Image 1 (cartoon, rainbow, N blue to C red):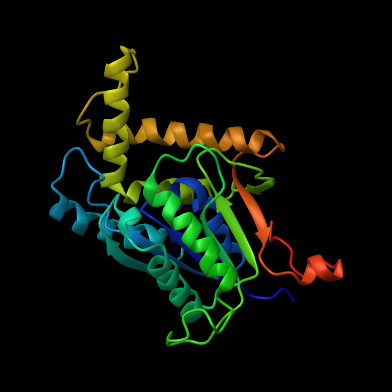
Image 2: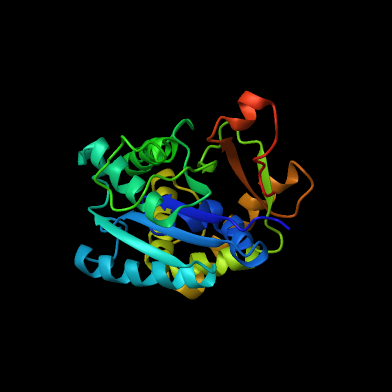
Length: 269
């Protein structure tokens, strides 16, 4: 019988996971029966053209929990750092906070932004990526943060995602969960509004006839976003004959298989 695993998804913002890994997370939760936890580091306070930060923070937090329910998550945890300011946090502090969550939850698998993918413009994504890699790689070492409340824990697998995937040979078929992915994304309504408003400004700037306007209501922008998500996931799936897919750089974090030449640790998909 296959071993039940625990998954921890570490992201900078509410909706990061849904955009790039929501279908896979749904498969982990609903098809594999794994316990999946999400740790969101920032408050999303700069993620809108329409809302004031104090309003946005409250709405975004509520929507993150609702999206987690759609995807079958056990918990959505919000750290609350100011949006777009993670580069101001001491990297050792950020790494330690993520490691503390790892030691508490004891995941077999971590998922996060790829620390080595090219073209990542967002400082929060870059900070979370490297801090998560370091936290997962050394969470079993008792000399790292010996003051933590929970005992050291070994993480053995990582699924790294990126806007521009690098060396990402793990293609996960999400044809069975694409609708869940989209449903969860739409729970982040403030972030979907941000997406369409950014597209509208880009369209205006270059003079494109994209039929996208500022301040579009949900009934108008949701079909546009759904079309884009389906096209993006269809392109990833087309490489291997899948209707819809998500793409990851899969990594074994331990050394057992490398040293012994075995395959004790293998990806689920």
